[in-house]
Image (cartoon, rainbow, N blue to C red; front, side, top):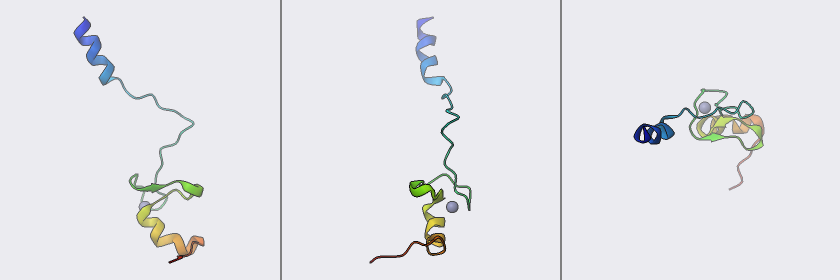
Length: 60
Ligand SMILES: [Zn+2]
């Protein structure tokens, strides 16, 4: 059925790429607002809390 095939296209599960880990915060496990730059792997909130401990400094 042509109608069903068309719908299937949108209901297919997304292929998972094993090479590409889902970014998760190391502290709270959240996935939103992630910072993967420099391999920090923290969300923006936890990054703010830990930035000084890791060695980031404010420049403003
Ligand atoms: Zn976090």
